[in-house]
Length: 217
Image (cartoon, rainbow, N blue to C red; front, side):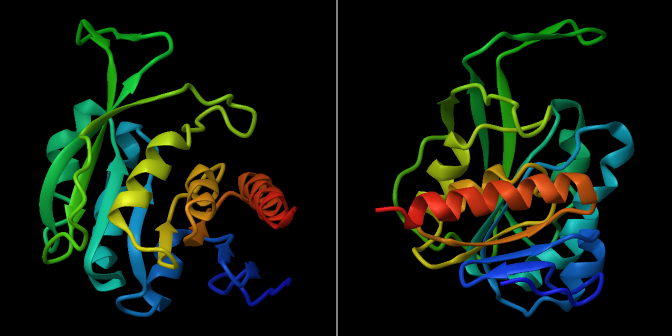
């Protein structure tokens, strides 16, 4: 169903999906407390964008259910700032995705990068008790939806073990909607927010394609 309700309203919705074409800073204050079972997101890595983590941190504790997890990708260089951006949440662990494609050499630091770090925080405590791996391998994404697209393997894995079936999974910077596809494939519901209209349109189409494939016999 289509639903246009202004910049902070639902731009496109389905019983299992709500998509917003707006800055997440405008949308999150209007979301109900305790409305997300997990936040899983991949903010931009640029130095100028580090403030996005603290912008998210202003709302994360209120939005998460007790026991809910927040998992965010980040650049290695930004670890001190990122880890300080969620003061109301409890730091739980550092996760990583091991690169299975070409390794990037980070000039200036003189480091060959073999992994992508993800910071894991929880609200009050962890709500599930399954053992999870803190490093998983992920196949390289095909980049057909975005140059910055992440693979869905790590998102599926952590959504499966750190949330419950039927939970709402929130990605406030959804980009190409890899988190959304992973969410739906794992039997959860998805809230995606993207401010760029062209990126949002591609993400919406990808979500619609995923829903159609799940409904096919």
